[in-house]
Amino acid sequence: MTSESKTPGQLIEALLSERGWTRRVLAIVLGVDEAVVTRMVNDKRAIDAPMAIHLSEVFGVPAERFLDLQAALDLAVARFKLAPDPGRANRAALFGDLPVADMIKRGWLPHASMADPRSVENALIKFFKVRAVEEIEVLPHAAKKTNFVSPVTPPKLAWLYRVRQMAIDLPAPNYSEVALHSALKKLKSLLVSPDGARKVPRIMMECGVRYVIVESLTSAKIDGVCFWLNDLFPVIGMSLRYDRIDNFWFILRHEIEHVLREHGKTAVMLDAEIEGEKAGTSERIPVEERIANEAAANFCVPHNKLENFIARKSPMFSERDIRGFAATLQIHPGLVAGQLQHATGRYDLFRNHLANVRSIVLPNAHVDGWGNVAPIE
Figure (cartoon, rainbow, N blue to C red):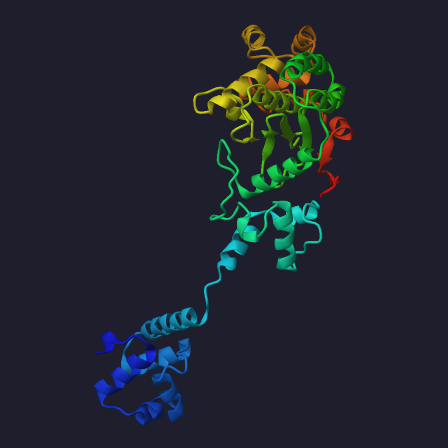
């Protein structure tokens, strides 16, 4: 009979019946008022851990049995009393998955405060340009979903939306593929010095490519992105999370190749952690990324010339060799150093050549981050 009990009160009543005890007898044995026993039998008084131990001593039933039945009863009562709240799962996704605190700090969510969840939800609605919080696409059941070539995390999605916001507001002529092909020659001539990077934003704009720089969110680890607002307006976004001349030119040329091949028209080309193997051309890398990586690497240092240099100088690469090779190619030694690091897998070497360019590029670009907050509509 006790095995059929579904609540602690039913179990106590069954145990009393087996022994032929009254509630008064149990009250005397436990040293409590009879009303306390009555409330326990009627499941009006919860069985806590001390009482479970006392009952175990009296009846020889494990204390855990009373506590398990009490927990099951409490849960059943709570489910009966509490109506389901779909908003709770939404808030878990929004506040748990999106980097809301960082977005507020960066000025992306004006008038929002973590102390006021409703203000955050309203700001997110405006940021993602939706009518209701349920439509924000980080939520599992949101109807609208941006099409990405590879899986994307909520922080990366937030970064992409910021790039898109800025690109929409950026004036630029219609895109010209011919102009962008011609621009590659201009860009190539800028590789000789870190200072050449300052001209990149204007050259991109003149080709009709909307070029913006948005500092990466802490957990996003994004390098760049290519997508199209429509058939006339391609967008290149960069994070400059690595302040190195080799990384800057590699990522830029990588994204330019995506634009030239119209890779971002049907699905967003979001490029994250393009270092090491991901900067290569192995079959494990998606074909669009292999094509872009090869174009970027050859732009920085022609592949055949790099192979020839390595064959002649490996395994010892002197400072004089690196500077001389760079001078022959009319590029900065940092580009040679970056490609040597990738080719040899020795990222601890040649670091003294990796000049910084972020402070050179930012004053001439459409920027959000590093203390700058682009206007938000």
